[in-house]
Length: 381
Ligand SMILES: Cc1cc2nc3c(=O)[nH]c(=O)nc-3n(C[C@H](O)[C@H](O)[C@H](O)COP(=O)(O)OP(=O)(O)OC[C@H]3O[C@@H](n4cnc5c(N)ncnc54)[C@H](O)[C@@H]3O)c2cc1C
Image (cartoon, rainbow, N blue to C red; front, side, top):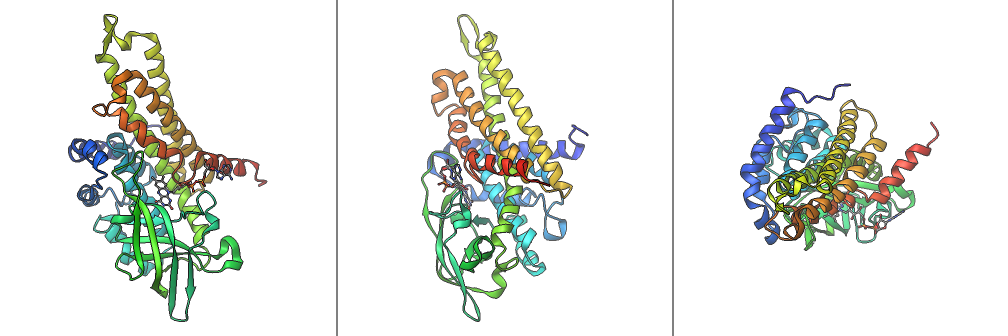
């Protein structure tokens, strides 16, 4: 076991931190209040290699691993969780589905554009009637002898309104249950494809979340992604990796809130001394820092195993469950340490408190993570 970052990882962390402070920090409030998607900044992140960290260089990636990727998501989320979420959905959901299930031709066509930020990607599994129960997908694609005709709608797709390419799941065989759902890769100009309602959200407001609608959307045979009927099973594998992103997103968000609370506690004076001198505040800070360390270690363990090519269903669900639940609690404590000022938008903890709630919901709720973990624990080998 080695608990140290490599010198490359330290350098990566430093450069992402500098990028986030220079390009993101000055705009956080404006993007949040205006629901503004920071397209130019996301593209800049792509030019810096932050959108292709886990993919080989031959597809335009940086050839790093999931620990490096977690560092990137953490550092972005520490300044603005919305940007972390945009990058996570683009990288570990959309691009990774193409990387894991795509043909060589599809990988060569799409990944270099996605890894460099020339194109933005989104990934559509959730539907109005199929959330936690994603196997209940209703969108359907029918093969008409020449190609696929896709009808239906998706909800809550991150990046939907800015995506150049969408990976979407649809039923191709109603009789085959979970082996009757296929994945398709769809370019934004395809007739019959369009983003629908953009949601007005509690938090993560700079990330665009919305519907994706398919109306007699004709797709060539070559737009099928992976084996016909295996799109749902592939999605579960994609989510195993995706949950490492949400764990890292939680760690970064919690770290941002903790940093703000620590610094505030040293400045704010009551009863003639800084509030950091009160034991009640010190205990909060100690518990918060301990939880962040534990969440980070669970995240890096899952990331390390993923890099070794091991199955991470249990470990990524544990990391996601623990990190997200702790992050919600940490952001709550960070507001508490700020007193009334924590309720005011001039202080960053107000936004962390709103943003962080997504972490216990997206890519599977905490209840679903517990189901996934329990299923793994009870499985007979
Ligand atoms: C900001 C945001 C971004 C998102 N981005 C994406 C995206 O890019 N792509 C995408 O496909 N999806 C995305 N989602 C969707 C997200 O993954 C779903 O919201 C989530 O999986 C829960 O589904 P649901 O909202 O339909 O809730 P439901 O499934 O209706 O759940 C409601 C409640 O019931 C509980 N519940 C459900 N089933 C069970 C059960 N069997 N046992 C116990 N409790 C249960 C849930 O835990 C929850 O508390 C996003 C969501 C949000 C809010």
